[in-house]
Length: 114
Image (cartoon, rainbow, N blue to C red; front, side, top):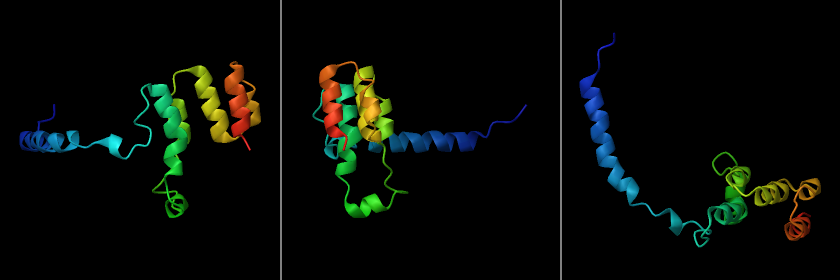
């Protein structure tokens, strides 16, 4: 049986106690262009396309530090039709739009794909 390192564990707990108040004061909505959306699905759909638009050309060049998270935000959408729409537009595939049942959303999807 291993012996617990009590001073190390105590140091870890004290570090967390000191860090948590500082982390809780951060306001992520200030830099989020999609914070005005009420529903999570609409917010994630907005984030999938708007956050990348806010980046400068220089930031887009550095793909290591400024990754494109479009597919990640599409995967967070719970409504299947919106999720299909998001994936089709993000990947720019017309065949993805054909899988959407909602006619209005399918038409919008086809219009967004170049």
